[in-house]
Structures are given as structure tokens and as C-alpha cells.
Amino acid sequence: MSILTEADRNSDTWKRIREHYEVQLQKARNQNDSDQDAVQTARLRGRIAEIKLLLAMDRPPKALD
Picture 1 (cartoon, rainbow, N blue to C red):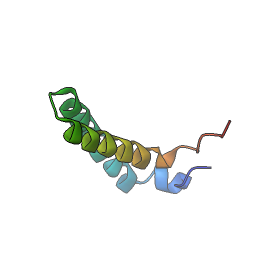
Picture 2: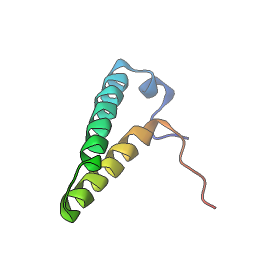
Picture 3: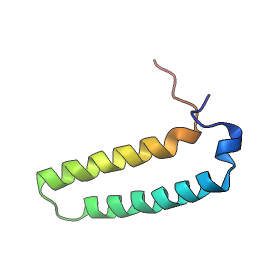
Picture 4: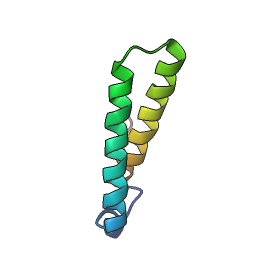
């Protein structure tokens, strides 16, 4: 079961949020591909991980091994 209900996943609000964060994810990935120092790279990777977690709210959680 995902964090969001079916109604949530199908809402216009979630669709706009998803679209916004998919763009942010791509921007962060592009920045991560550029020449950064270790601290900047770590921050970007953390941001990417957080965005991915947010976008995963409409998917069921992965089963533990």
C-alpha cells in the first residue's frame, strides 16, 4: 500500500507536485554531472535522494529481503 490513496494519486494537485519535482530531479542530476567539490556533490546527492523519496509516495513500499 502506498502512502497516498488512489484519490490522492489521481488528484490534479499530486500531478502538479509530481511534475514539479520531476523537473527538480532532472536539474539536480544535471548539476551533479558537472564538476563539483565533494561537499556540493554530497548535498546534491542528498537532494536527489529526498526528491526520489517524495516521488515514490505514490508507489507501494518495497518488500524487505
